[in-house]
Length: 134
Figure: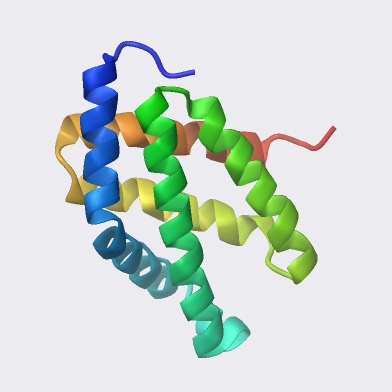
């Protein structure tokens, strides 16, 4: 659960995320693929398009989570995403890296308060993926 913010703070941050989501998704995927060039070979052009679409969904869900002020909302979503991706041959580490890159891009592309609020949600989700199952 995220604390220390007002509903107005959450609403402004959510709106900023939704407004900038397409550009943020492009930046996140570009940086993820720059850091992990083997993704091009592993997934090809179709994989990159799916990654962009998924990243946009992640940002939209993050915006909702920020808007309601509960990071558990995004964490549950990320755990669900992982349960869908792993059986499709996409390792958890790819999702974790994508989320870490998301945090970095948010920090550089959004106002500091908005970025920090969103990054707390992302950080909580990454931590949940790093915990051993069970």
